[in-house]
Length: 353
Image (cartoon, rainbow, N blue to C red):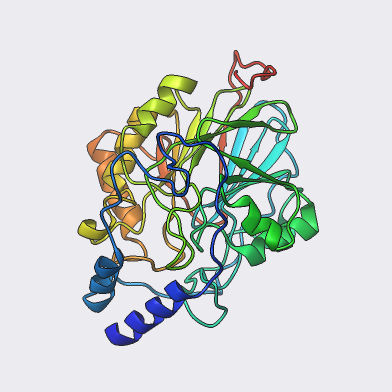
């Protein structure tokens, strides 16, 4: 099995399109060709091959017959916030009359190939046909489990949303025939249909869809301004001081969507993926009123088991006196509602609340 997995991994790495280059100005995180974090990414192909050759995976049980959750409400415009966990890093964010999807994937595999690559263990928690009108789709980076071209094409055909991507990934979507794409560098913003601003923020990760395009496009989290306060979407990231930086700029978060899975073994994943302990630290750094654990339970991407991230999050949360209403592991198809704030007010033209 280890040998077969190794071959499969190499084939997937060699497949796929080369990402477009970004033509923006040189900056502290862009050298004119490639993007980088403040600390260099210290994991290479040799480490990945070592991982596949010596895997010790946790238990995963495939069940695609699980029933979907109830269709989401069409809109939320009463000042409240509704978060529906669909699967992996895909969350439907409904607030202030806007419907926004994060890193959507409804495909069978997180892969450039329909017959090879990480295969889903659970169905999406919401049927694609049951989605409400989607206004905005945000993409955190171009790894296949976060930027799924077949799903994005379906969304473009059915909903014609605005697609917001990190710098360099706009050509990838446009080459796939997807229109309405906006590319953002860190700290750049884009106005949502309701006048609130969506801002790309730094995270600690990397990009690449094949062996030849490492870090030619950016990776990002996002802060969604709302009348009741900012909402944070981390995408995929290791733990670092960027959470505190976002809170310092935008204030305490009304809610945070934080990855908790694909964290074992730590010698391979610590740089790029948080474990539940790191996610709880990020929750406190962001001063989030509520956090939702994402990036777990759908695709076997590392050695933690299918239910291990949620169980570990529960243990860590108890140790920090966080109960389920403060930090919950997302359950497919489940909606998490936060009431309207008493003193909330509409966003102004700068997207602040």
